[in-house]
Length: 210
Ligand code: MN
Image (cartoon, rainbow, N blue to C red; front, side, top):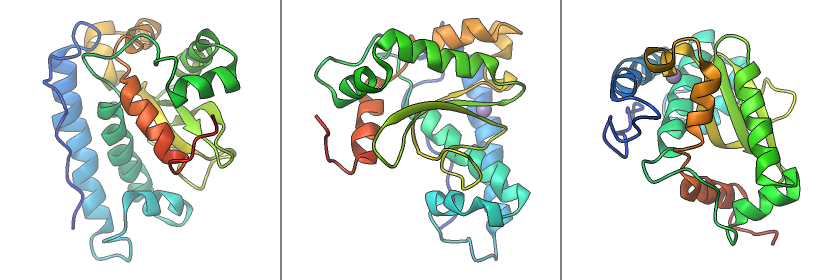
């Protein structure tokens, strides 16, 4: 019924030294837990109760600010934990669809990395950087403020997010202080490309362009 805080698929210290255990624990048990509780409170007794989070986000323009902020916070963090792994990093395998799509839409992995990192580093204030699949199955990079995301019907360019990076200070301040660029670079060492590939294939409805 109500939305539930998902368990992390690894221990709090599993992503160290790239993301430290204390940051992970506070981020999950305080921040993500808070968004989850407040989302449930915000939809209780409304016609949004019982809807999927994706359905709620797709018509967020008609919802309250509380649903927008906490629904985004619930969804964004649920995605974020899964696209990181202690076994992550590097580049996706050459035979994966996500590798082929990155080559097709960015020209090289380096180009993709630079564009994604720039989106994360230049997002002013709090927000997220995203790699998304649009309705034509093409990849694009974007960033959103606060807890907004590319599923919400409030953006110029919508898509299905398959990789997201939280650039709120709460995501990195304990270890990196004001050095967001160092945190962004470290994130590339923990990206779970297996999960991103799976999300790319799901966003394509299982159909491959390759
Ligand atoms: Mn966060």
